[in-house]
Image 1 (cartoon, helix red, strand yellow):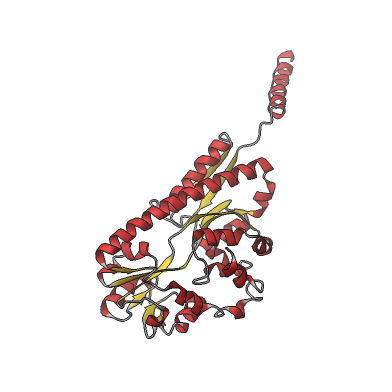
Image 2: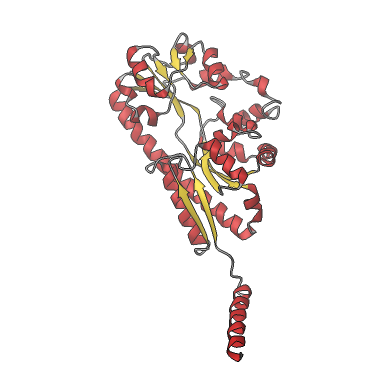
Length: 331
């Protein structure tokens, strides 16, 4: 009997020492994204997991699931809301695809963001914080950190384009979105919807004479074999973003929130460095295969000036009134 008592006392002593030394329970989180194993996003997600493990002294483990293993953006957001998934690393543009996230459609506005730094400062600016708070409350998803540049979209064509006036009558394959259709019709182009799997042949046979994707896509899909020009408009940008289930975020200690923020910031810098490298490599490929037209030869201001006012009817409806002007004026 005495032996049993001593054993119990020993267990209680170990437990009490654990509480006294501030021992905390191990946390395991799943993080999903849509990119393949060689993409900068996946490498940055692994870096994030590594840093979180280091900063938490092995107490927090992030398990990374790449390549849409857990579904596409909308499916993963749904899992965040239901509590079946803890984290997602993906574009800020995609938040507009779910109910309550519509104000973030402003992140897909063409020719609005001058570069990655301008876009990131916009989304972290004081005037944007009420939008973030509203969306977080409406969706139940925490926007932990917007960190990590992605390849912007451009244009490949079979005609030289140096200003907005050169787009008139251009048969172009675009996304089937209201934003894209309004934009390209405004430019005088003739937008068409073609399945991506059929795009190469459509370009080769002249069904369409242009398409709008970034340099990475043009290089990897070998569109340079059936296109003469790449136009470096960089007209739509995105930022890879760390999302988390809001109840989970709220349950974390300030210490854990801070270490996650620190790790996400460093992973975002790593993502940006990798992205710039692969973009540079893609342009080396394109310049060897086709003519690349870029500023100053490309008159970007003619595009930017042309779209001012084009989406003003969405002000006060999809996002607060005055946001577009605030973004343009942010130095």
